[in-house]
Image (cartoon, rainbow, N blue to C red; front, side):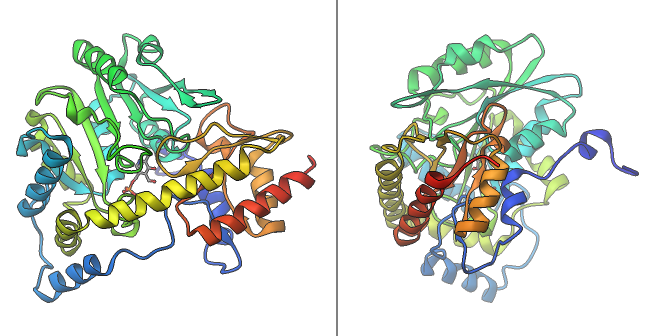
Length: 388
Ligand SMILES: Cc1ncc(COP(=O)(O)O)c(C=O)c1O
């Protein structure tokens, strides 16, 4: 490809959009393909953005985010995790995805190795690959009680060239949640070998049976090589706002400002003002969404787990189910036919890394009415499905 360097020319469209873009705004489709619900962001958060615009919040601001937002994030994290966070560690570079990209760019040279806990969201692999690093994977195990992986299994895959490890807990697409002892063991390894740990915690509030999932923030010191990624997208239903935050080692703070200049030159300013309101007044929204996701998870388990052709390891967090369906040979062929014949949109498993071509991913954050119809149609399709 002319004018494009090889690492970028090699990128391929991911399987989620490959299916979804074919009928994205079709009202006949029950869309369970993307990681979002159907409720618009809460009105008081939208009002705050409108007010910020009316107040003239339309100028460049600090590339690590406006100070008042960084202070709100600090208070939110300090109250959630009951520990002090050095304000120099907090930056708002744009979306969570920009946070992952900057962390990958900061830590990896061509020829280095990166390790991803898999199954994984495809954008993460792409972001790692365009650094020119070699990407290795360590696979979670599917068990009857949920997906599992120990720190020892991750550490076992670390090589002398590993410079970055990516862990997403609660996990998209499996719902795996890393335990505190495993976090401690992995952090100690990264500390000792100076490996940047990218801890993607965008689903930190989407966990079943607890206020929040165990976070690396609860155990990391100011100078530990950990970047904790977070976002307004999931917990406050703000996917289209494109704002997230990172908590980094304190000494990296100027580099996050400089890298943010390269990528986005800061997050959209009036959105940042609305994010303060989300943090300070939106706890009830987080709780309501969490309850909705919990019921969605139960519906998915009740309907899919008993089926003889469907194997589902129940998710413990995030808002996805990642069932394996007996008889599928190509997850892309299956999802395309499901869309065509049943008007239900899900994501094909192959796009979440190797070993998943019999799986599909469906998002249960949607309204329960839509979810119920979607699940019923998936089951009836599975029952009559025969390979081509
Ligand atoms: C695991 C994971 N990390 C990061 C992101 C990106 O979040 P955002 O949309 O806030 O950039 C997503 C979005 O789905 C995700 O699932």
